[in-house]
Image (cartoon, rainbow, N blue to C red):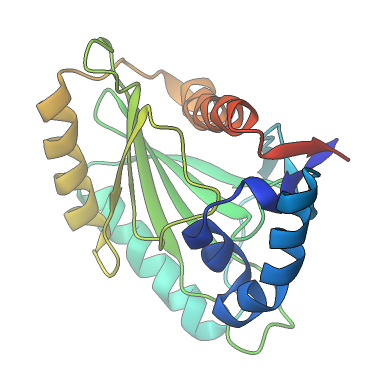
Length: 220
């Protein structure tokens, strides 16, 4: 079951990222009033569990242009040594719910994400993300996440070292990701589709714990 975000517990930057500048300004009086009254203000739903459904392979892409982009990115990743694991649908993600899964090296779970909504006039461009869980958390960092997406809201756990690289190619993101991991130590090994799924589910669970600690989640 989803929870709801408590808008009163979000920072001003998070509120603007979540709602957009205009909508955030419009909700600000309600947010301030609720804060003064010491009560929560329910916002959009957020799922506390991340699930994946394996999909049959087919020609993907909501438009011919998107299909060409996905095919080119897939080719680039395979040529860089990424091991393809298939395509998944993540129904509890807020957007870009289709994911092509890869393992890169022994410790990188890579996801090529896009939206397969055919009635969207201009589908958002695919985004690429990589996560590595660290063997040693002595630095206070549990994992490294590299992404071409803009900063998300609410902010991720302080135990996640986030690298936002808008406009980076898949190979550029993977190279930068590897360098970030090396600065912290070594990544834990991942095995097959199960390892890929767990890497993303554990990242989501880590963030949920941080959001609960901040009082961001309300029972729906």
